[in-house]
Structures are given as C-alpha cells and as structure tokens.
Image (cartoon, rainbow, N blue to C red; front, top):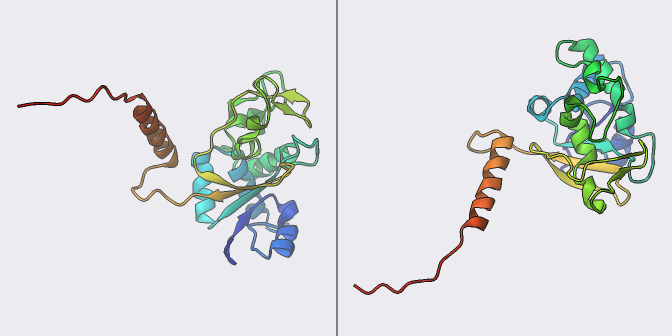
Length: 212
C-alpha cells in the first residue's frame, strides 16, 4: 500500500495498524473523538450505498475487519458489531437502529434467518464475503456463532478483496475508485454480469459461404 494509504477499522486496532503497518487510520485507541468512532460505526452498519460516500468523504483507501468464524475466534468484529451499531445510533438515531439487527423473536443472527439490515450491512458483507467457497454445499459453518450459513455468500460492489490471512482472521478490502462514467458500483456489477451472460449464451451457428 502507499505510505499515505488510510485504513478504516474499528478503533480497537488503530494503534496496532499504526504501529505495525505505519499507516494512518480513521480512528484508533485514543477514543476522545466520539463522532469519528460513530462515523466508522455508521459505515460498518449501513448498506454499501450509504457506506461508500462516508469512506470517500474521509479518504479511506482500505477497510480492515477481524473475522473469527473459521478458526472459532470469538473476539471478532461480528461479536463486537452491536457496539458499533449502538454508538452510531447515538449520533444518527433516525438512520441506524439497533433493533433492525434483531429478528422478530429478538435474536441476533448471522445465518439465513438474519435480518435484511444485518445481511446488507458492510460489516456482514466484508466478514462473510467468499467464505462459502471454503466449504462443500450445505456445510458452510460459522464456528463462533455455531450456525450453518447459506451456500451463497454476500456480494460486494464498492470494495474489492485485497488480503485475507491464511486462517481468515484478518480481512482487508480496497475501496474502489468512482466509476469513470459516473455509474454506481451496483449498476456496473449488474452490467458486467449481464454482459458475461450475454456472451456465454450467444451461440455461433455454422458459417455459411455466401456466393453472390
């Protein structure tokens, strides 16, 4: 990464990133700036369409999450996630609501029964992106939460995977640049997907020699 690449993560890891990687972070363990921490919470707990402008506004280049589902590490970001939601709700109560992350039965879930708000949050997407590829169908397991996950994981449009450690504990994503013709990233992804499909379905018939 560039020397001045800015990294967004939950504040717990700010000093480690600064110390080990010598890169600036959006927030760190010096938690006096509650609005900055709440901003990270809002970005993590929102849909990509909301998170992306926040990251661009704060000139974030990379986003780091800690994910323990493969190893069974319970101190990961999904287990800390409700703190991020609560702190963000403290500043933006109309936009972030903790109750939206709980099912009608009051359960905090990450499996197929997770709420749409949960499944669409940036944190959920970054944590579980491509995770299903490690398992055979029907056996995708989160070893921390003790649940089976859907065979298809979430889709990410505004970030691209830059690094995942061998045990999947550390996951780093690069924030995509703005589309050069002004389209939003979801539209670009849909266009490219449709384009590939079109190409695949276009079958060529036998070539005919035309004689005039």
